[in-house]
Length: 387
Image (cartoon, rainbow, N blue to C red; front, top):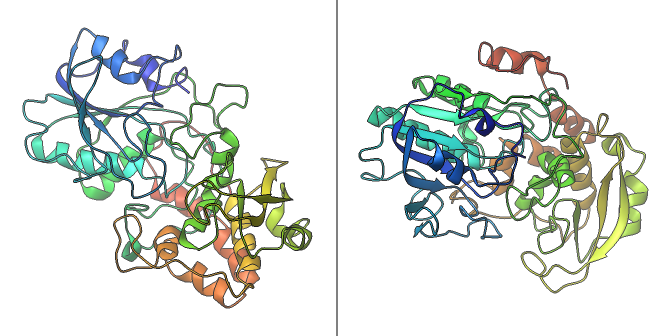
C-alpha cells in the first residue's frame, strides 16, 4: 500500500530536516515494500533518532486488544523503538528531547474505531507542547473518500477507540484527519506530504494488501470492519481466532441457517450475502468451542453499507437469551460499556435492546452535508461525500 503514499513524495517535498522522530509501523512501506523507517532514515536531510509504534506493535506482533508491547532497539537502525501502547500512549518527557521534526507514516483503515490515528493525535499534542513541527506522510483510505456512515461520536463518549466527533466511516485520509484533529485541539497545522495519486473510491482491488494489523488480513476485512467491530462490545465472536476475522462471526448458540435465512435479501444485507458457517476459534472469545454463524461476502461494494449490515446482524443475534453486552474494561475504559464507546453513544445499544429495526437503519445513515461542513477547508483531495 505504499506506491501511492506520501512516502513516495518525501524526497521531493520541502520538509524540515535535522534530528527526527517517526511514528510508524510495519505496514507503512514504499512501493518496493521497504519499511518507511528505512526510507526516512536514508533521506540525506534527516537524522532519524527515534521511532514510535502504535497498538499491535511496531512489528505488528500483538494479536488481540489490550495486549501491550514493550520498547526495544530497531535491529537495523540501532535506534530506540518506543511503545505507545503500553505503559504510555503518548511520548513521555525525554523521548522527544533534541528532536527537530516529527514524522508520521501510518496506514489507517477508514473506521473511527481504529486506534492508530489517536496515537497520532496524542503525538501531535506533545509536538505542539514542545514546539516540534509535524509532517504527515499521507496514505490511501482503503474504504475510499466518498461514503460516510453513522452519526458522529458524542464527545461524552470519547475514548481511545474514538477521540473526536467522527462518523463510524469517515472517508478521510490520515493527513486530513491530522488537520482535523489539530483544528479541534487548537494546534498548529501539520504539514502533509500528499499522495501522488489519490484513489477516491477505495484501495484498488488488484493492489498488494499489507495487513495494517494482525486481524485486518485482507481488503475485504476492512470493507466490513466499520460495522463488525461493534461485535467487540458483545459476547459474540467477531472472528478473532479464525482466518477471516470480522468477516466470520457467531457464537455457540447461534443457528447459522436461520441467521442467513432471515437476514439475506433484507435491507440490512444490501450488497452482501451471509453464508451459513461454523467455526472453532483458536483464541479470543469461545476459543476451542464450536460456533454457529456466518461469513459475510460483499457482492456489491457500491451498495454495501457495513454499519447497517452489522446492526441488522446484532439485532437478530440479540434475540437469543445467551447474547449479551460485554462489561468494561475495554481499551483503557473502565466505566462505560464497550459497545457504547464503540458506537459513540447509547443509541445503538438502546435500539437493539428494544428491537427497533427502523431506528437502527436511521443510525446507520451518514450525514454527508454535516460531515462536509465539519471538515470544511481541511480536505486535501477533491470529492463529494454521500451516504
